[in-house]
Image (cartoon, rainbow, N blue to C red; front, side, top):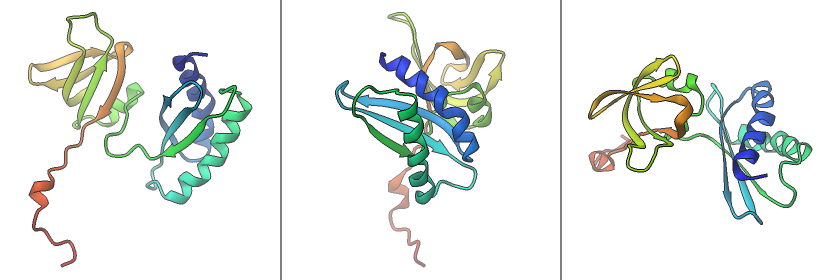
Length: 165
């Protein structure tokens, strides 16, 4: 299986069990070498991800990955919170996070624009609307190869603040 097939298989195998365990399966990232791959599973829940919840998820995720024989050899499994730069994978993600900054990468022929950065402004049919420096642009959902929220923290502005006061 190639990387795309492994990712797709893992997404399909984990989507419903994640929901049954009170999680949203945000995304799956496969990295590392073919001899020692790392599968990172990003899970989210409405209660705020707690370390013990993510640790417990490791057990049922591993059981599913093993039962589905997604890997023929050894692998490393990581369970993670999506973090502030959350991946956007489903059309509903773009609707849910309307009004937030995002970066979208698409499959595009050489010489054509492939990265869109701006404020998510909804969806229309099978298109993502994003307000960029060039105005509102429509990005075809099926062409998206990667998308995530963009959160920028200005640590310089925090200089001199005292949270212990």
